[in-house]
Length: 230
Ligand code: ADP
Ligand code: ADP
Image (cartoon, rainbow, N blue to C red):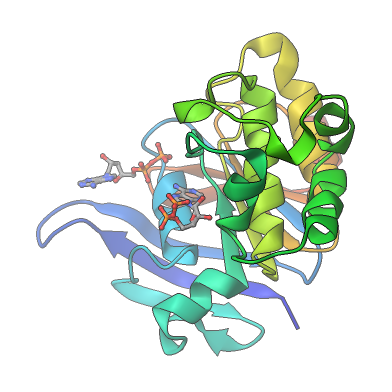
């Protein structure tokens, strides 16, 4: 069971600080895609960092398949939950080595399967050196969208059950955003997926949307419910 349940989650960055998350309830049914949308400072990244186990809750809990994430050893959570950050690290090495970071020793056919899933296989096949293609540091030579899809392929190779996409369009120019989000969400099908965003890109493609502000959920519903209500 890969259902994610967030119950009355509270997080703050120090005693006396305001609550970055102030009693958040949210559920990602197994295999569903849920978006969390809200302005800067709403608490979205804080939520991602609790799921990815970079921070522990100050109150409430996050459960995956009924198990509290704080009951998993941190390195095991890294395998259960995998993230695609805003600006993924790409190392000055070959594509093969960049992919193998997520699963050392992975065979080429596993890497191709991950690339196909991330909608990146055709572009890599078209490169004269394929998986041996050398990329520059910070992904020099790859477009922003390719870096996101490479990070997604890497996240999938780690063999997770839950995916966190943290503002995947933040560093992309507006006309490529929609296509990249569509590719990422298609690749994420079947995982319990949390899409974090501050713009509206991709919201018509998710199963449920939570609107957050000042650490609280203001409303939630399907895209249709939220757009016809307004
Ligand atoms: P969002 O991702 O929606 O922009 P964040 O989760 O980054 O929101 O921030 C939520 C709140 O927590 C904000 O008030 C922010 O100032 C505060 N915050 C975030 N990170 C830190 C930090 N490392 N130290 C102190 N306060 C922080
Ligand atoms: P690395 O930087 O080598 O990828 P980290 O320990 O920083 O490794 O991160 C562990 C995993 O979490 C990686 O898959 C990384 O891409 C992902 N990650 C790191 N920060 C974030 C973030 N803010 N949102 C989503 N995923 C993240």
